[in-house]
Image 1 (cartoon, one colour):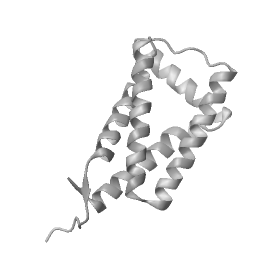
Image 2 (cartoon, rainbow, N blue to C red):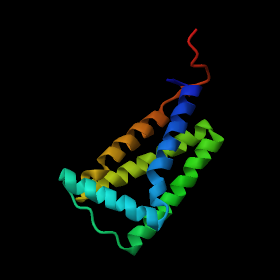
Image 3 (spheres, one colour):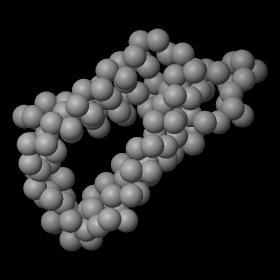
Image 4 (cartoon, one colour):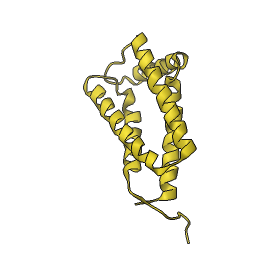
Length: 137
């Protein structure tokens, strides 16, 4: 069981992580740079799976997803309410499910590190918490 201050630190950490990871998805210009980096990583590491060349529809949905997650991250940072961690855990469960589905369908393993972080934050934000202090007495 986590104390409330620890849970809130976890909530903020997940929000900052999301902001950093998803901000490049939010615009077509930054998405092109991110996609190039992911493609280079996929090729240099010889990862299994495919990384298709994005078409305008891919870019649009990446930008929509990036924009929504950036705003969601800012909301969690600004409000810092524990209940937002529960909603975020549910979203991470969905994101993880779709990443697993993509991997099972042959998508590049370049997303595995992100999947691991999604699962870890999802579990952490699903843990029970209690009022209290993290101060060591």
